[in-house]
Length: 102
Image (tube, rainbow, N blue to C red):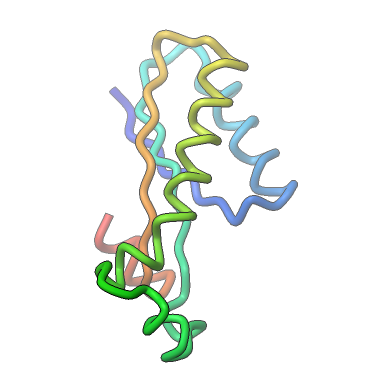
C-alpha cells in the first residue's frame, strides 16, 4: 500500500493538488496523509495564554484538525474509492522539521 503525503493550506491550488493525487492513484491502494503545518512563530503569547487549562499544542491544532477531518470526509464521499484511506495530521513546526518527523 502506498503512503502519500498531501500538504494543504486549504487554498484552491492545494485542493486541486489533492484532487489530482486522488485521480492519479485511483486504481491503487493508498493511505493519504492529509497534513497542515502551522508555523509556531506566528503565535504570540496572548494566543497561547487564551488556551486556558488546555494544552498549548491542543489549542493550536484543534480547529485545524477538525478542518482536515471535514476535508477527509468530503473526499471520501466525493470519490467513494474503497482502495483509499485517509489520515489527518496537524503539526506546529517549521516545514522541513514537520516533514522529517512524518
